[in-house]
Image (cartoon, rainbow, N blue to C red):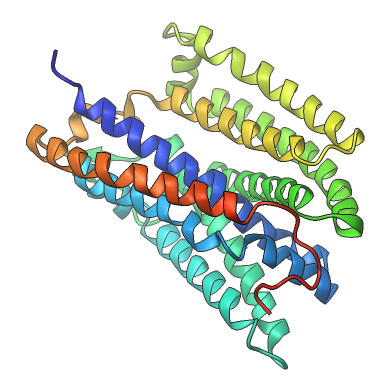
Amino acid sequence: MQIDLPVVWAAIIGLGVFIYVMLDGFDLGIGLLFPFFEEKGDRQVMLNTIAPVWDGNETFLVLGGAGLYGAFPVVYSTLLPANYLPLILMVVGLIFRGAAFELRAKATRTQHAWDMAFICGSALAALCQGIVLGSLLQGIKIADDRFVGGPFDWLSPFSLFCGIGVLFTYATLGAGWLILKTEGELQRKMRQVMKPLVIVLLGVMAVVSLWTVIGLPAVAHRWFGSGNLGWFLPVPILVVACIWGIFRSLRMQHEAIPFILSLALCFLGYSGLLISIWPNIVPPSLTIWQASSSHSSQLFALVGTVIVLPVILVYNAMQYRVFRGKVREGDAGYR
């Protein structure tokens, strides 16, 4: 039996992108939460919770991008030209965030400026990721496997609202991570911050879902008219269950459960997206089979991925195991 390599590669890339969103999401979320905590000690603890792992988290963004380039080259000739500006701004945001992370520790008089760079870089990267997501979901104009739209087709109220949704998603992940990794007054503050974040996030998810049904007929048909309702129906039910679980765990003073359920909430949103566009990789019409490279190219790349991917996963698992536990003010870290 021949392996359907486009499906295999779609699964690998989908996994890589989700792991990136899950891991770098709470990294970016900490930058988004920075403005609400002006105490120098609080900010230092917040940074120290991600200091050992933040750069490794971005490995999966490279995996997703390299996988697309090797397995689905047509995507590069459509998705990138359609989103050049937000993608460039996303990279700029990630660069600013990384530079600020490293340089604020060496700064004295300019530390506040680097804090602002960290905040703005995190916000810009998260917002642009959401805009690209919204642009993808609303569809990209394609003819002969090429992008034929305008340079600002990505800019719409829907894509901007998706950008705002990603901001709140990452902020929620960041709050959950800090509840897990901190203690005392900072942890108490994070519990207070997470409650309104979750409420707003639920509202944003509801608005995006309704907007999708009303404004994107192709996606609405996929939800309700193509036999996919049975796959999609559990998603909103589980979302409500996760929201209830988060509030209950916050009330019960649990430390790990709010973060775990925020990850589950992120996964459910990601699953809803995949259900909405499958088997397209660039909506509304470019499928994974149409966009795939040759069988030999995908097979060659798969051999290397099978060797390298487990190493990356083990390395990331080990770094989280080594640096597990609470982070306290005064612990060694970026300073």
